[in-house]
Image (cartoon, rainbow, N blue to C red; front, side):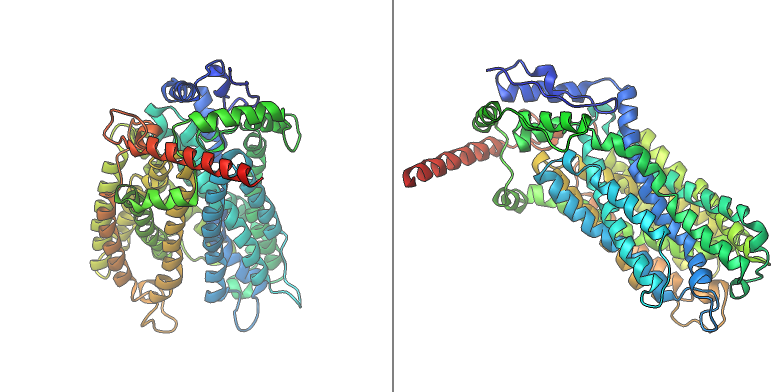
Length: 575
């Protein structure tokens, strides 16, 4: 019996299921369909797919980075009193920023799990809707006698963080499962590299709104005197800056909602070609859900369940799979590497005020100059190290390989953090700036890129999204530790009224601690496999004759099928 064709697909995501629908053996049809994806020559289809997924990361990065620029504006807009004097309290500032990371952990674990259970297609776009909604809600938030503006911002940023967290596993695995094997790393890296453009755009928007309200801002000589028209201007500025983050998401939303289910998920997890195709067609025609012929659907599912050699996903199989050291060590390697990375990656930002002062972009005689220098300074920092690092990684990820880039990145970061930490009190501002830029470069041409890519490739389809979510959540836990624990530690021993390096007397020791975390990352790198130019099925141990081949996979599938038959037989006897 030939398989029924499926509908769905758009300019960015081709429907590969139909190309081999005439083949009756589901295992052979699966092999040929996936080979078609793996060997497809790189073309505009791949570029469009990267853009659709990348816009999400652009939005994520914009929203996260914009809050750092808006933080000073919150102080003027909501804390203009004799106690705070136009400066947001440290605890409130930290809580607002950490709220995003906390929500991100929930989103990474929740969306990662659901994408393996209900499908990539059904979840993709929902996280973007949540981001758009929460972003607009933040921009409309205000103070009142019964509600704290900080509490409201924390609430909306937790929700936004959940959406941002969901984008990590979904965009990674969807790009991975649609990509050609030869350039899969570059495609995934290009999606992740949109973070750099998001940071850059946030700084540019901050600069535009600052220039737009120049006449009002120059009336305030400092934060405590920015009242009247100056305060009104700042209140408008932060709302525009935060609210603009919803614009790119709205553009990409249609394409995310109309993608077909990935063929790998349809074959390996859903085993329901009929329903997946009808759902894809329903989204294209504006319906909420597809309505396939139930007889044809049940028949096809029964045949695939009996004949497909890939094990079915279950909690028992998940535990069995990762209880084996050869599989568990990979998850430990991806999660551990991301954890160590994010502690230092977010911690490097603790140097920002000193770096900006070193290059002459801090302070000013009025609030216009303060905001102007902050925006321009951040543009310089992003262009100097972050963006070049991302795109150099895109260029070499599929030739040099993931593992060498991650290993060398961790090594260089260990050296750089040692240099910053041990030489902190003797280095000039320009020297620290140079080390900061180089560190940013090797973060992105290093573990910041590879920790996102490898988890989207090295796990089996049935647990790929969940495993990526666990790895990413581990990283965000590191980020929370960096913000909550190491942030306050830098001010130990500070004298009241101190400025410059004197305001962060313990920062050198924190940099030394970060060097230790980077050194630990070198060892977790040994636990991950090299995924360059290997198919996802080969990495999952499904291809006979390859080093990764796992003959137990066929046995697991056969045992699971036999158990299902026994269960069905027992049920029929009871009836």
